Length: 111
Image 1 (cartoon, rainbow, N blue to C red):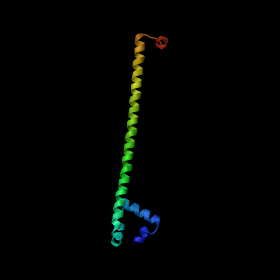
Image 2: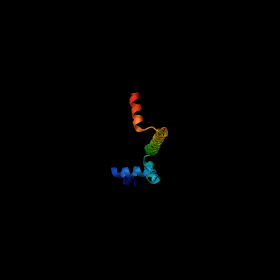
Image 3: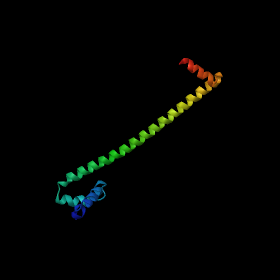
Image 4: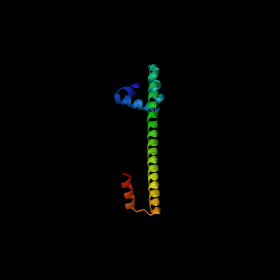
């Protein structure tokens, strides 16, 4: 029966995929371990490495999405600050009765 799981490379890959998701763990591993018990080390290491890899990918996706959300929030805050500052500047200019030409002349004098 083990020949159907490990005869060809494609069968071996599919079998290892089944093992990595624990789909047919008992049906595949128990007969193999009955004939070659030392393969328990291989299957255990394979499961640990696969689980670590999947966990690493999941954490990477979470960190990436959190980072993107933070960048978006910071950009929104900057836009809000710029809009508020421009409103304050605009309101203070009109409250003092200054024209655009007077502001330009004042800027030219400071340079």
